[in-house]
Every structure is written in C-alpha cells, then in structure tokens.
Image (cartoon, rainbow, N blue to C red):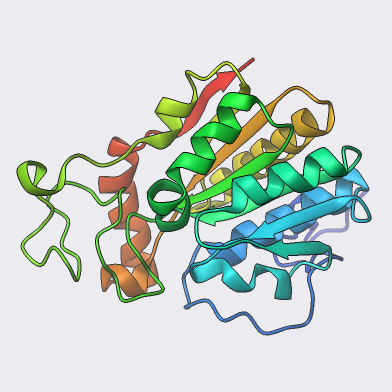
Length: 255
C-alpha cells in the first residue's frame, strides 16, 4: 500500500540513472545531441545481457570517435569507414565475442559504403549501430549522403538539389534486401517512448548477433542541433516533421 502523497518511481522510469558501464568522463557532444542517449542504451543493453567481458565495440571517425571514452568495454578504432571490415576480422578471430560497430552516416554511408554492404552481404555475426543525422556534424555541417532534398548545409547553402547532388541515401532500405542480414530497424531517441523502442531494438540486434543469426543493422534517426543551427527542442521538432517522413521509423526486416 502506497501512502497518500507518496510518489512511486518505477525502476523502468529512472531514465537518468547512470548505467554501470558508463565512465565518469565528461562527454564532448553538443547539448541536445542524440549520441549520449544512444551510448546510454548500448551500455545498458551490454550490462543487462551480462556480456561486458565479451563485448568489443568498433569506434569510427566522426563525432562519436571518442565512444571508447564513455563505455567501459574493449574497443578498437577503425580508419574512416572501415569499421565493418575491422569488426569482421575481430569477430572471425574471436567468435565468442559480441562485436558491434558504432558509426555515423558520414562514416558508414559515404566512405564506408563498400565495407558496410559487403559485411552485410556476407552475413557477419555482428551488429551495426548507425546514427543518421543527415549532416557531417564534426567537420562543420557539410552535406552528407543522408541530407534531405532542399536541406541547407555548409556545402549546400541553397539546399540540396536532386539534379546536382542526387537523392538522400536510404541505406537501411537497401541493406534489408541482402540475405546475410537478419534484422534491420530504424528507430529514434527523441522521446521517452522512442528511447524504449530503440533500446529494445539494440538488444534484439545484439541477441541475434550472439546467436549467430547474421548481421543486425540498427539505424537511429538523430538530431544535430549544432549542424542544423537549431535549439535542441527545435531540432527534435524539425526531425519529427522532416526526417521521419523521409526515414520512417520501425522494423524493415526481422528474419
């Protein structure tokens, strides 16, 4: 019986609890960036699965280059775009490990497209976490493969044009057609409900990789309020109104 005027806080609602695997290092991300939330979810999933001593993350080149500073597991750094190739080598030589990459759209969907697609096609038993914020956040806000049509960036000051720059690259949709991929999903972390869905997706992807069911690809549609020149609140609203229609949330494949 809960006494009157007593507030009951359920464990699943303690959204600010620090995961056991998160370090005390101060994050370098801009206020409002989605990376910190996704880091928290990854740390929680690894801890809950009891695989901290078996998990190996592959850190990319980009805003999340220092991911290894924040989650207390083993990490390896890959050259720009080569995370899937590095993950392949580590997983094949350590088949009992949970190997995953953590990459942005500039890293994965631009210079790393070849390595990513080939790893997916081979069905490597790894998980790929892919942060899509439609811009190159670290280097000054240039157009990325995922930049929306009409979206203004440092290199498209008048907006992205189809005739000049092509269409936004929906890499998750393409990867879902590959036989080696067992799970493809697109989630977001802009609300409490979406954070819970994203965490379930990350956990499912890790479980499938551990079970040897092929590659899991978890896309997170994210905000970059610094690159978009918006406040964190306005960036989330802009993402809902513009990013979600172009990159609809939900599972694309669950084999």
